[in-house]
Image (tube, rainbow, N blue to C red; front, side, top):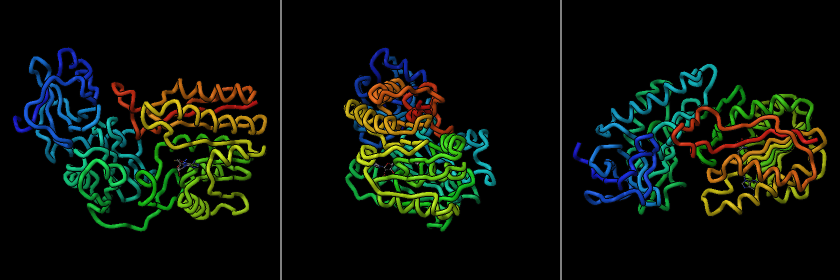
Length: 394
Ligand code: SAH
């Protein structure tokens, strides 16, 4: 292609790239041809000069995130092919059927060979979140191709990258519509209605817990349920649909509490069967009395980086300890970690430490993970960030 700047790797550093690992660390780079700035499209070569991959330049310890292992021009046709492949995967899983499902993640970064790009689809509206400057620079082309792939069904595209990228770029970044405008629709997931909150957290809704909400529904019959870190209330709604006797939803964000309250009403659940409270989870759990048969703990990522691991582990032990101490005998605890820097074994060990201190005997009923529209590549295990345990507490 000749038009992109290039970098050459140190000898031996091509091995992970040949296995399609999508990151290049700065330490692997021998030299660059041309001046490279954050967001540039860069071609990567081995020390012997063989083409390996193409990606976006970043400024951190990950110097490049790769989106192509074929030497192609990175133009609209390229983005269209990538988005089509991502769509095809969801189609194969039965997730794109407009009658059955109106909310799915269409692009999940590395998992779809598009590091730095998230696209969620909600009932006619796509929300794009760019996690890299390179993807933000390409977002208009991506939006045009997204419309081509999804066709009539897609009415509006909203870019929501400001929260993520504001500190990385030196210009003002404003979230806005790239196609159409806000449409007053309810988001439907698994037959339940949610208010779509474009100003809300992440892209507005947490699709990664879709399958796990069904598991909560399965175990909720007759239970008094505590949904901690509830956000828009997916677990609470499923618990009530599954026949829970009562649901208490807790979140520190007042906006989240407004959302969950609206969603509970929207779905017609009896007000006497639920209660919502804006409170800090740690304080709430410390003051918790007995009386819950099923507890859900779905905290935000306690460790976004490696350096925060020990603080995160203490956080997991603390919340799980209080839940395990106080859950009714025979109760079920759903406990999650979405921190990429904490692996499944470390998370399970933290929960074990909590169980030892609580003095409760605990069986593992089931291991949970993120829903399949958030695929982790086999060569990129870092993509498997959501870990969950269903525990039976004697
Ligand atoms: N369970 C939710 C997603 C949870 S996201 C769902 O299924 O949709 C994590 C939530 O934790 C966010 O809503 C955030 O507002 C809330 N949160 C963050 N810190 C908190 C704290 N200290 N106490 C209580 N809630 C907190």
